[in-house]
Length: 260
Image (cartoon, rainbow, N blue to C red; front, side, top):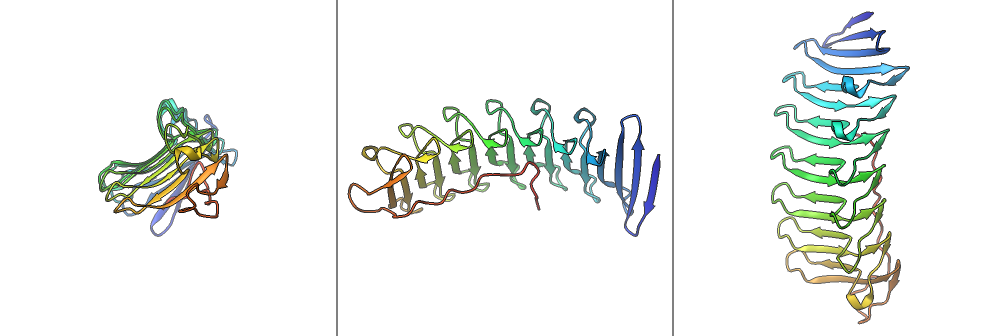
């Protein structure tokens, strides 16, 4: 069964597939005759078998490039990671993939040993600017394999952020190195080092500060804090210590984020 509605600049078609028990909503640009939006539904929810294709498809009316693909099963983002990402976004002019997210049963998920579950690319160069490793919606990657969050400056290629997480908590053996590292994109100077163990700021005072901040150009240390098992200690030398515990940035992200 097919219904067709015309408006000034778009036309709307509703197509029922009784065999697949789905309803497709198609929005077509009247000027270019391009289908700019396809959405598939079943039982009032976005739904399409991943093997049949994405449940949401968006195209640029001028170029016809598919700019958005979302795989949704029974209302939740879902696609087996081995088959590819559940959310894909492309630049409308070049077709360059700018964003990928792997989702399983509504959660951001991909085995960390296989690769990141969240990938962002620079529009101009196509270089990867953000990599995030998730397991069941939590940042997760073995510190031995590398950081769970990586950010790069598109212009310089400098890795500006490295963060190590295990099961959603900052974690890295302090003897090996800090769990959070930030660099200045222009100079490459490490401006921030924070040591965490099992979700608590921690480093033995004899080894050095658990929090270090530096001036981006000179690399001179401007802040040093000593923490042990999440407790802020007085600096052994009595200097360069902040009296307050720094705030922890929220890390939760939805499976299908609102994107510009």
